[in-house]
Image 1 (cartoon, helix red, strand yellow):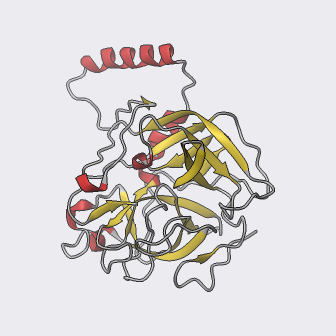
Image 2 (image 1 turned 90 degrees about the horizontal axis):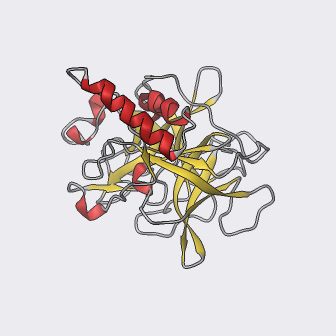
Length: 296
């Protein structure tokens, strides 16, 4: 089911199951499962999403193979979580390192409606105006309702030199982020958070280069305030490291203790030191963010 991308100007309904790695992250509210964020299936038991999507104490499940959230659909799978790992340097105030991994309760079987995404090469940087597509069940307009049917929208990439200009996002964006959109018409919005920025490589395969992170607090589609994504390519080492160990909790604690002892022998701690935060994380509150920023 290849995606229909030839007619996209604003957001539109996707061709059913044309983005089979897209998931709906849902939380249990008094026995009712509600969509809160998007995410990307990257392996049979792993989902990539945004750190700010995760709140301590909530029960989550992952809906895979969905098109319309309000309908019962053949091929859809609902999976509980075995573990949630938020980046150890997640900063909810300045929205830094907005990335998390969810380990599913059990592996999911690939099908016509469920498939793991391709990821970019480590450190890959998208060129200015690269055509990419944001997908999600987020709000269809600022302050509006979330979508029942999965939406897609064309968002050309805005390179870092442009996105970091004072009248764009300035220093609020880093090179660990990807900006896309900013035309004042098309954008991600609340409920899209954690979902993918899909870009086609030279071989024609789709790769997930971004995780929806934040946008303007003035409106979702404010001019010169493109949707900002966590750059997946800048966190490939982290993703690989988190997925590789198969520790029990006690083994994990022992592993961290050994690493700390080794680090004491060194004068300087590596910037890439990875500490896995197991099941403990915070949820970003828009009211605490710098002015004009809002997580989606």
